[in-house]
Image (cartoon, rainbow, N blue to C red; front, side, top):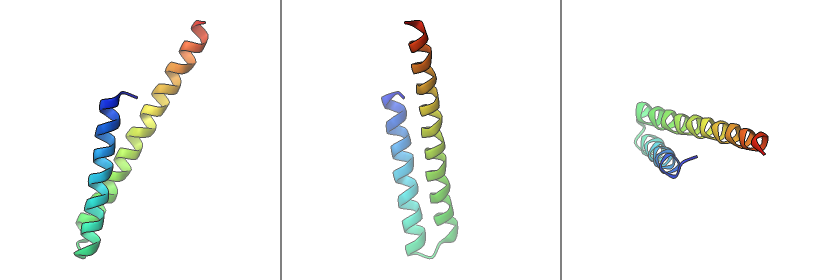
Length: 64
């Protein structure tokens, strides 16, 4: 996973967590749900990058 993707995913995850907490504190269900959605999207991106990295590792193992 590229460093820039890691940083972007972490930022999206942190932003989502902040939105969720702010929504919870202010009883704003829409903001809370948006925060959970942002966190879920960041987690999916992270999982996709892990699959991509694993695929590259397997390719490299067969090249040897």
